[in-house]
Length: 531
Image (cartoon, rainbow, N blue to C red; front, side):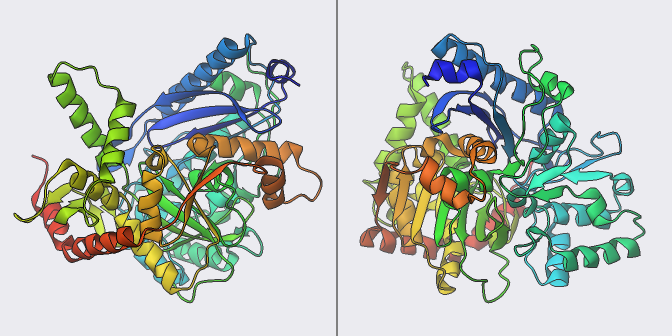
């Protein structure tokens, strides 16, 4: 079947992911290769002390991304996109999106980036003997309870951004298990919320005067491959106001960007892992056994089919690199040039390879927002150097790349001490777009070979499309691991970079300075305030 016929007959699957800076749609055929894509750029806002996205822009952005995809299909193949075999929606994990009985938001959407739930996260971690990070939905809920926020009594449904979109399109209050594991702890044996912890929280809520029970307001947990509802007529019109998208299309369980990243890198089997590096950075390692104790730096989540995963999540990664790229763009424009952003990023990354292995003594913090792993509730991007440090463009860029992964390395070092074994570590996201460079920096941080697949640039929306395809195409009893290994990634081209001893030593020297001078970053947070 050629590509035009795939589209004409509806033998295609669609994945759409609402990422930190872009909403992207990817359409795939039966061979799982991308056929077309469309996107919409957006940015979070800091309003009333919370990082948020407006829900009206969620819908205008989804409509724009889908319209761009439809236009790409018609431009490439001369066919109008109509019937779709299956689709799925994913988004940034975690956060807080409470709805009332009519499905209307009771408070502004609070994203994963917020670090306003420290008191709640610490209290729940102690109560459950299980690490509850600040960005998890249950931490946001409990903090709102501690704050005495009036709307909490009226919550009928608490969900994430992916769960909200899915609910509005299908009427189903469900989540994929990987996404649900960023709301509340999951029991990997039952692939459902941990019942003992649910009961413990219900006691806490009852003592505070709340009438709802946790399972009444949380989404139902589903695993990859489960049926998660169909697109309603209202949902179809919400996504495609032109009316060309038909109702009745089956939807896969909505997932988070961690789960779609695992699918997109074939990292759902034990002893495999992936690192997603973009606006934020996180490493996901599928475990053979439980960790020996609770670590506040390590989150316990799951694969899309419920296997336990150790996650190191950092709020900040490429934001400072992106900001400086705009500075360099402005400089070139001041010289009368018309710069190409891809060339700017390529030059920035490639120049880092010529820098001194420890960054020439430069010290750089990329904290645009808070970073729980290092105990910071807010961030201040900061460059510090001694008079003897060598401020060259190459050293500056190496320090930028080290800074993007420095906090991640703190978490990875904990897993190394726990003797967590990884046979395969794959990178994806914007940090790896320039060939080789990002891989080498991550290999130095992780002390392990880092691979990038030829499809790494497709990222989360492609991973969501794969999960949709798995739901409708798998053989009876076929696991997600088997489907990805044999139906999707067989014969996939992979580029691998092994750790360089001098890079590892240089990164270690940089990290030593970084850890020692964290007090400087804390002082900057205290002293540098908005007027």
